[in-house]
Each structure stands twice: as structure tokens, then as C-alpha cells.
Length: 285
Ligand SMILES: NC(=O)c1ccc[n+]([C@@H]2O[C@H](COP(=O)([O-])OP(=O)(O)OC[C@H]3O[C@@H](n4cnc5c(N)ncnc54)[C@H](OP(=O)(O)O)[C@@H]3O)[C@@H](O)[C@H]2O)c1
Image 1: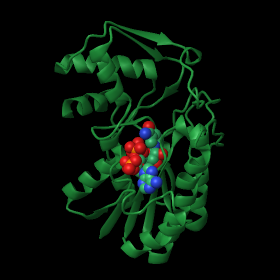
Image 2: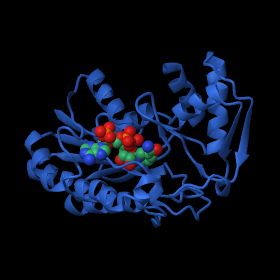
Image 3: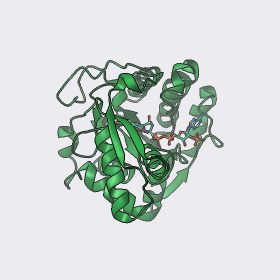
Image 4: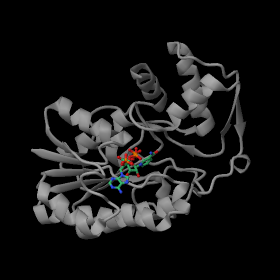
């Protein structure tokens, strides 16, 4: 079986490629040098030419704030190229796993969003990802869409690495405490994606680690874990602040916790709590 991974230099793509190689799968890793998603007119043909049994589409425009200025590019990559990837997979007759996000939700709920909850994106990024999901499913009704959230891992840029850096530089960190979600470790996401693929799943599934956190809770746990493993920490205070004190161009959902009831019925292992996985990741650094 040949598995093609797009966005292979990104944090989730890299983890996926390494996990597939460790499993002994035949894996083709591509990024923008091989297939440029900003040219969707060329994407379907290029993807079809690989004739992969599965395509895991981790390639995306992920700069949530910059997308507010680069609206057209975000839609080109997250919607039009996603559709073109699906068209390529359709032509070559393989299966597609497309990765999506909790930012398709509006944050009005106070109980976990289900796969069929009504989306209401608040940002260009969220809207472009939602339209990407819809485009993929239109072209390939049996596509597997995996929504995840608050992604971090050893590879690439993420909140954990930013907090580790700042905690080594500053005495005080100020972190938003009124947005709730679930941090998700790339290693756990990949394991869940592989289980879904092996089960032959199709349709939308949501995967995050277990538990709920604010960005403040997450930052506190990162700094505590860093201290525990002896990483350099000068930060003495982590101060919780409201979103309005840390204005950013893109609006984030105040609550984006996603239900995992559906995916739990496929996984034959318990999903780790986010605190447990954070420790594992920091130990792996
Ligand atoms: N990060 C999160 O917190 C989060 C949360 C929920 C869902 N997700 C979803 O998870 C998936 C993976 O995200 P990630 O965190 O791994 O993001 P990432 O680290 O930013 O990786 C995205 C990948 O897409 C590639 N890419 C960007 N523009 C491209 C283009 N024009 N042509 C081809 N490839 C291009 C990037 O290539 P370069 O390295 O060359 O830029 C990179 O390899 C995405 O679908 C994202 O929406 C992420």
C-alpha cells in the first residue's frame, strides 16, 4: 500500500510521515516544492499521478491571523486545493483522509461540539477550512475528514514551543484564560488517523486528546513540565488575562471542545488526557 502525505514539512505531516515509515509503510512525502496548493489548477493531475492508495492531506494555509489579510490565498489553499486533491484521488481511485479544524465552530456552545453540530466559523481561516471540508465531501462522498484542535508536536511551530521559549526569556507571561479547547499532540492524532484508516472509516470524525483547557491552563502545564525535566525557566508568574487584553486580527471561538463519542467507538485504546501527552511530548524534546 502506498500512502501519500501532503504538507509533509508541517507539524502534523512530519509526524505522520515518520510514523508511517516506522510502521514500514510505503510513504511518499510531499510539500509545496512537489505540489503547490496555491496553484489548484495543477493539483488534481499531480496528485492523481502518484496513484497512491491513500492520501493524507495535511497541507493547509494555517496562519490564522495572517489569513484575515490574505483571504484569497487562504481560500485557494484550504478550499480550492483541497477540492483538487479530492479530484486527484477520485481520478486515481484511492482513499482520502483530509484534516480539518475546531475553528469551523463559533464557540457559542458550552457542551462539546459533535460532528454534526452546526458550524459557524468566526475567521477567514475557519471559513476556508469549512468550505474545504465541504468541497472534499462533494467530490468524494467516502472521504474521511478528521477534525482536530490546538495541535502541537516536536516538529514545526506551535504554542508549546512558543511558551517554552518565552518561559526561558521572561519573568512574567500573560496568557488568555477565556478560550476553552483541547490541546492535541501530533503523535496521538496520527495514531487515531491510522486507526480510522485501518477501520476503513469514512465521513467526519473528531479527535483531540481528552480533557478541557484554557490557553492559560495549557501554558501553566507547559512551564511546570519544563521545570520538571530541567529545561531553562525564568518565568515566575503566569498571569491569566481576558481575550480583550490580547487582541489579534482573527476571532477565535471562546469554546471549541469537540465530542469524541464517535471516534471512541473505533479506537481500541483509551485516548490519553492532554496533560499526559504534554508530558510525553516534552520528554521527547
Ligand atoms: N495547528 C493547529 O493548531 C491545528 C488545529 C486544528 C487543525 N489543524 C489542521 O491540521 C492540518 C495540519 O496543520 P499543521 O499544524 O501541521 O500546520 P503546519 O505546520 O502549518 O503545516 C502545514 C503544511 O502545509 C504546507 N503548505 C502551506 N502552503 C502550501 C502550499 N501553497 N502548497 C503546498 N503545501 C503548502 C506547509 O508547507 P511549508 O512548510 O512549506 O509552509 C506545511 O508543510 C491542517 O489541515 C490544519 O488546518 C491544525
